[in-house]
Length: 462
View 1 (spheres, rainbow, N blue to C red):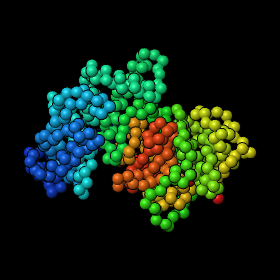
View 2 (view 1 turned 135 degrees about the vertical axis):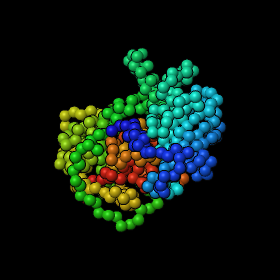
View 3 (view 1 turned 135 degrees about the horizontal axis):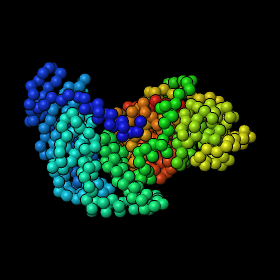
View 4 (view 1 turned 90 degrees about the vertical axis):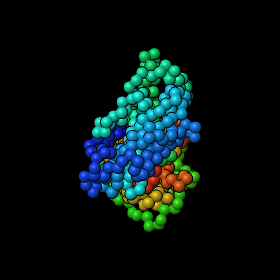
């Protein structure tokens, strides 16, 4: 399922929640309505404002006006539905806000979950005050930035976006065969910039999203070309569980600094992330056990692993078995990457590395960290929600948007640590060094974010 569909399902679920009007009297102990001035509305309203202003420069932050709201008890928490007016300063930088330069008052609808004193923003819809406000029970996320989603774009805004798109084409050396295709890609690019704002607003970490080399691709194109549906749809071979590490994990660790990680590679327009995740793991295992770091061949797995589907996806568990059955892996120099399947050209005589077995690791992230620090980089699979537009920082998408059950991308854990007290996993990706933080992705550690702990594994080299 594409990430946007996950979002729509979440919103459909929210529409089923019956909210109590402000004027209604309480009907039961678990359901309570407050009038407009009730102080308990202030905390979720301020939180919603903070989330709206997150990442904005001081001169670009909106100011809260009037607020009204409704609430319903949900489990151990409260679900607030708020309407607020906000005064927003003019903005004329399309990379920051996308909306054309005007002095404007916005009318926003927020849903904030307060569970045991911790707030989570579930929905944010904002538009000009003259826009029709959706009724509770009929909200759709398409009304988020209604001016861009429904109304014709002002001419000056279109010119600005065309300029930004031209810069994108120059930066990433993008050319199109026809004027019609270029116009279509400009339309996709503009829509993606709107999506970026939605993803940014719903991220609780320090990640920044924006223009990347994938910004002219539709969500469906990106998913089909670069991701791996077999990770969640394929039947996984059961693996032997790894022995637990009794030692406590050090506060931080980074195998890049210790020589166990090769340079960032690029899978190209091929859903071969599974092969890169596995070779990265085997490279680390060979280095730790044999003392030599070799860049190993992903193309060998694309061509010779008949249990997997090359550019159409694969499973790390299958790849380990294929390596063992083939008799090892050749190096990148001897069997270079082509980015498409071809006839198997493996030679046991040229193989430089072998593995003895493979193991599945604990889903406990503390135990994963301890294992990584002692044993080496770990092959994992994650839900790639938001990664199409990830630039830097620690990603922490809302769990319903980045479900651990919808993993679709295999990567390599190479370390962990904290940035400004925010715990992270350092993840080696396979989309080249001109994506993310020089090819790396940083994901929040400790909550099973995006399923990072659901499919952790490693080869065994004796």
